[in-house]
Image (tube, rainbow over all chains, first blue to last red; front, side):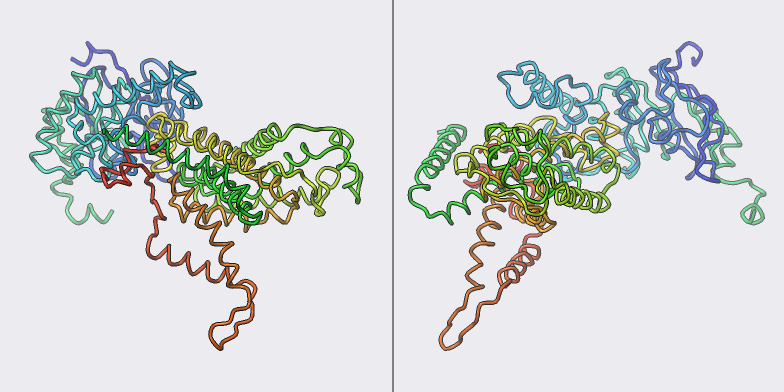
Length: 269
Length: 351
């Protein structure tokens, strides 16, 4: 299946070192277009670092990242976003003093053509005024599709937790991405919410024609939604494959649970 | 009657009433009161520009006095006549190219603001890489550098002797006209999507970057606009007081504006205007506490500096009982005034 699809995101031998610590070691992976794929691994394996390298928050020590054939290695985050990559954060990062609608409208700014001073007069700068109104309307429509329309005027910080997660995704979608990175979308959700999340992620991919790449600890979510999974441990890739293969892979089990005969001795190393 | 119609009528009445007041005041109030009313407008302009930088975009800048100084000097040097300039430079002769430079008042205001914005932009490029308190200290330092430069560039600025005899161009119409223009600009800006972007940069810079916002560019832009406001306010102030010297633009000047912004509420434009009214009138009105008083048989001699003592107590009271300022981040609106609180934030820009 993988060979049929073109890879939209390619990481080529990416390493990220912080002083003496190697957070990501010689990682290469290609994410197929239109799929839902996952990156898993124990805590501290370097998953979020990979996301930060992809989205431009870190410049990799070596290696290259390319998106849709275009090199994005070391581009600043706002340029990466403009190229069509958007992300959410492990700990939700909303603009907490803004309303739900304002959060989504802020996401639209990257695709806005009018200059900032054109807001001064709607009579002289008609195009800018029309664009501004369109942004408001399309943001409301987006909120409607994600079931947040009723809370459009509410302060984003006063939303319940699950809705804040959805708002963060809505805001990411407002940048009109073709690739969405989700950093632990199920974190802090109860079993029922994470079950709903499965369908939500699939719906996102189909309705918005996205490629989705996610980090997740909740194995029900990962195994339920991902078509292909990469497993990291200690900064290196230890396995990849379909969910069923990953579940059987002894190196993955070792990474999560330790070796059966490792015991105390292994821990002291 | 719908809320919209009601608000339109009330806006019209409020603006009309205020214009009538501006027409009535010069005939019926003495010079001291007129000066305070002028100062309220100028302080409001300065407060609004600092609020754009600090309250809305979240850059803790303590350099406003420096930008005011640039605006005041540029404007004053342009409105002074060549004759006045020829007699004023005693220590060293004035540079010749400046002697015959002359511009009408309104143009000098714009150029004063533009000069401050230009310098502000130059300073912003290195300094805005800093954040938080470090930015405050760095801007404070640059403001002091500007002041020292002005005190020592004697052929241009007449040094610490200052400039005297600046024509008193700033009247109520001028200062409130400028305030109206600044307010219009700010309301349009903050209610547009660009306003959302500014607030986003303030609330979470990392998330703003992820949303494709070039946060550094936005910060430089907001800082530059804020500096324009500072220069404009300084230019108006110079033409109100008719005399300026470098000592006028010490840190205490920045502090007064910062106080207006914080008392009014960081991020609230109407709050800044209320803060300006409150702080400006209080600073003057509390002067009576410095004159000798007789309460019953108790005679209190005048204590210089007493008003600052009482004023600091008032400020402490504001901090304890209303730490977010008079308005918080909300804006005044008639809906809010009549108790349809709603969210309080949605109904912005009724004024």
